[in-house]
Image (cartoon, rainbow over all chains, first blue to last red; front, side, top):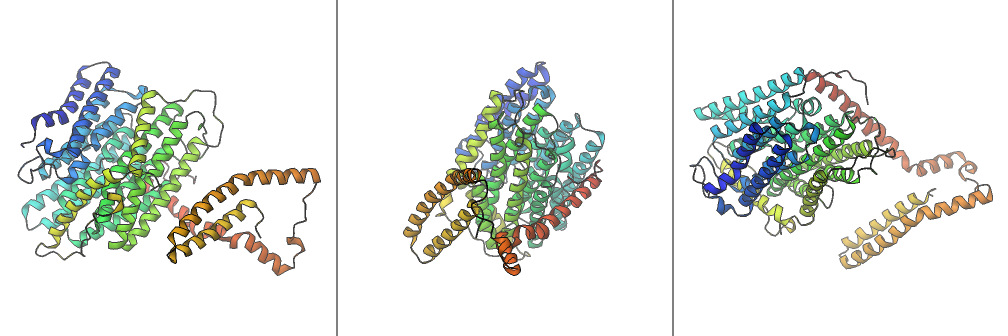
Length: 471
Length: 130
């Protein structure tokens, strides 16, 4: 590890400081203020890696060093600290607890460390740490059955991942090891038929830890780093089909839920599966679309989950079988909910539209059925979001109780909305780094295709430099 | 043939969009662009003013005490009335879509939801349909 020490301290120091502060300080509000400051510093350090990778001292490290910064890590690194910042800034006062603030910092730190490495042992450590922090966070307030379910799924995922790494290290059994790693990734990401824990976690456990654990998608990163470069075409095809099926399945089931939390869980299942499906394509545009979706869905979905939590803090448990009204009392929250939801389904003018454009256009080239299923998933997602919106915000005049947002909530929601809309209007600065990341993934896929004993893949269509979106 | 002003405007829009696509296919992009811009402005005006027209019509009905003209469908012979109804309901496409696509999809999704809940032992594995 020979990165710039100042940058590494700026990246990981704030997380450690927030953990120590949560352990020592007894005032939860002060701990929150400290956590917000730490998350801001950490986000700034992570953005440095995206904008000025040379400053990190890790840009040229590859393979030999435990930490390195490739094109994919550059764009993913700001995700965990930004989600950490959103989480601590918007958590309602009544739900603040010091241990939770410490866990949030630990989850973000584990995820950042994971995004900076391709060493299997270090990735496994980050995988275990983030799972442990998630289970610990969910254990507060959840019923024993839910905790048991989550523990079984995650223990099984960790076992499969560990066994897969061991088999890959043996050499002759590497192919079987990769299948086990894929199974672990499917479990962690909640791909059908291993998806049932995600709606359960959203419904019966705590949304905050669940979003912070799931939205950065460390499992997808593991797949892109350890599996994609060596996977056989059959393995990729199986993963792509399962992921595509899951994206439609999740969106369809979100349509029939009666609990807002559970609908949210299924929407996340759908979105995260689409990222994995796009990464398994051989078209540059589809892979770029998947990488942009990785960023867009993390931001939009975290915003969506936070709006539901804000609404729950004011109204209690939300059911979708009745109309709650209240648009006139909290127009910003309602508009944010709608925007975040529609951004997930490719609404024009948002980053989601860029994603759909790239994914559908690219997918049709390499895997025609994927184009149709992507559109089907987006349509069902939009229907589910609109159904939720009408139920949660429309249909009844507002009461006399003041439900307006607090200032920090308004700032966070407006900030996320601004990023999604600005990136949708001027997608170049977001798409360009994603094109570089997709080129890296395709080069790895190309290396796999030319490896002895591997079936050749269809011709890789590199992303076109003159693509209007990338300008 | 449409009985409400918004449906009439919607069908007129479809017609114009078709013509614009033909213009693009013929390579007349500039004409298509001008056509599109003019169409957008004019149709927006129509959609925004449609409620006023309806309001005026209702006012007229109130003052006359009855509809200005009797509905034509009762005076039509049987097969023409059915045809008129078929056209009026847009070939019953909405009802067909509801029965053939939407209802089976929702039924399947609800059954799968019950299965998902059963998988994790959640209460509500036999919950009532929303």
